[in-house]
Length: 245
Image 1 (cartoon, rainbow, N blue to C red):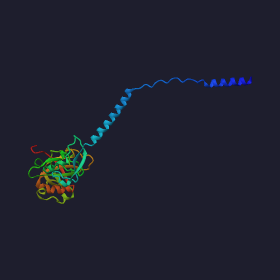
Image 2: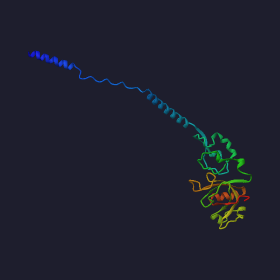
Image 3: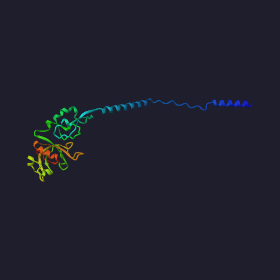
Image 4: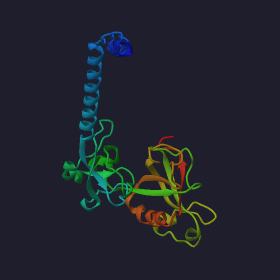
């Protein structure tokens, strides 16, 4: 009797273990979104295209002229003062390209050109148009108090030598004989035309500089005394009425 009970219990346990614990619910099939995948691919292509355009634009470089030494207004630019440099092309900047180097013999600097500048068209003027016969263009670097604040291109000025040299009679020749100043100031040029004044040819101080660049057109005979005084920083200019005023 006990053997039968044990056999029956064993069969009961075997049948219980054969039954599944519980059935899992079927998972829902994933919904595919082909439009979203296509959008992702499109964004990748657009990004790649934009990067390619930027690389191509960065490669649009041109060879232009860089000034390697200071050039005085009215003077030609010697080949030794020019070097080649690559810059990004910009339609808004009138660069002088390096392949135009052989054409610069017919041009003169319209104003003083500082070493390190990139040469652009407005810095040059044709030789035939720049200087009339018997005239020279002299560049001045004036300090505050040596020029009127509203000085501009086209004005007529007189130039005086000021300072210790003037009081000692440093000027000579016809300019010294025409002295009309007082307190040791000596008239160097009675009348001259301002070609350029400041970095843009207008009045006011030049930003970032303690000096104010001015170029004036004078008779060749007045140039020696004027440039000597300019080199010493002892030139002052005053506005005078233009001819016919």
